[in-house]
Image (cartoon, rainbow, N blue to C red; front, side):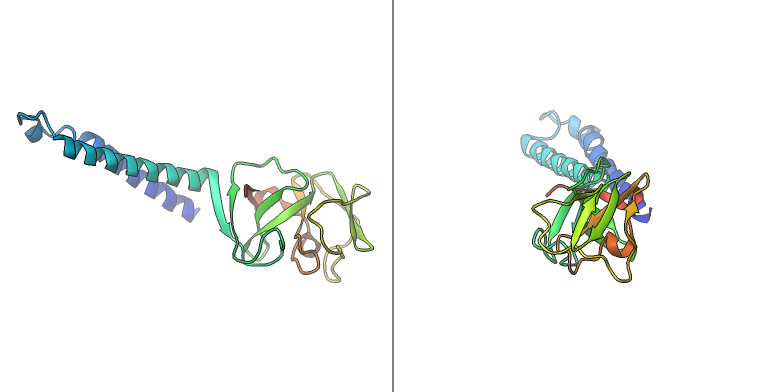
Length: 196
């Protein structure tokens, strides 16, 4: 909530700057009395460029506070798709998540990570013999490079996902911290769908 308040304050500041250039600099009475009819062309061009820059900044604030998000990955759990230090852009407004989608989410420890959705609400998940079974069918995909084994201290299988729950796995299955460790993630833990 604190970051949202800061982003709103920045947006309103930029909006005020934009309006300041729009109203006060164009309508100053002392300049209007000159024979040139106000600002000369050089000043008008400068004001126009400042208004464009402020407008672009306002658009960027809106885009990255309400529509898009950026996350820097701090683990290798999505190798080879993403590596430690990779930067991803995600769409905050997208809540239509399907199997195979990459999502940016908040892990139980509070960190932000990217994982792949392998099962959605209503699906059953089972892991046996190094293979994940979704609704009784072995998971198939070009993103599963290693065995998918359950965790000794993780959740028990089979598992049925309730409404608003997703089962996520890292592409580096042997080392990844994912739903096998902490269970299904809820819709409110999803930050958005990864775009790149």
